[in-house]
Length: 292
Image (cartoon, rainbow, N blue to C red; front, side, top):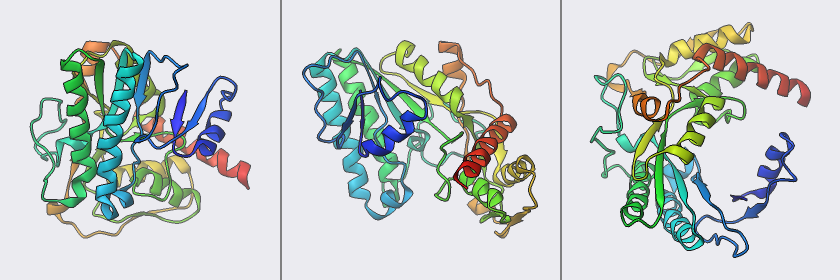
């Protein structure tokens, strides 16, 4: 069973993989969802948080409500229904601003977002939601595992939103120059979608209850180099434009340590960054060709 705010959109996505006959779709807000009495799930993957910068900035109270009230409801429903394993998809945002001196941030880092920043609603909401699940795990009511997700690159990555990689792909595929709005020196990393799936299945089945694991890639790259790699993969006439002035005060880093999940669950990334870019660019080019 798959629960979503927009079932028609999800059904269309699943139909691409020929899964329409095997999937039960339920349209519901996570805050109101009730697990049907005839359905006895063993596993729950809770990923019902909109990755919307606009919602987070414009309606921080609504973002908090979706995360916290939604977590309370789905935890209660899962415990009532006898769910055995609960995987919560959190975010690397719970660490707050990663110090530039830390190459890869680990799960035991004790920093956090600033509660004085109202744009931290998503970040703080995820922290509270993790705590809520861990309280239930400590009370032996459910096996609760957290995956702290970082950044990803794969087919279906939204284009023309707040994701740099998606914006660069869209620029290049539409013949525009690839525009980097900053000085391009901030550091990110990107995990390919198939590796993400492997990590999540491992966490759901074998993750330790009450523990959090980073999910992502530790292969760091600057935003400017990412733009140049995407330019090379697309093989178009587009050029990379660095529009921002050099400003070290604006530099950020968002790269996880994945040593814990690799050691404990014996999983690792198979698709490197260059291949991730090439595969994603190829998929989108073919998809645009079909649409045209």
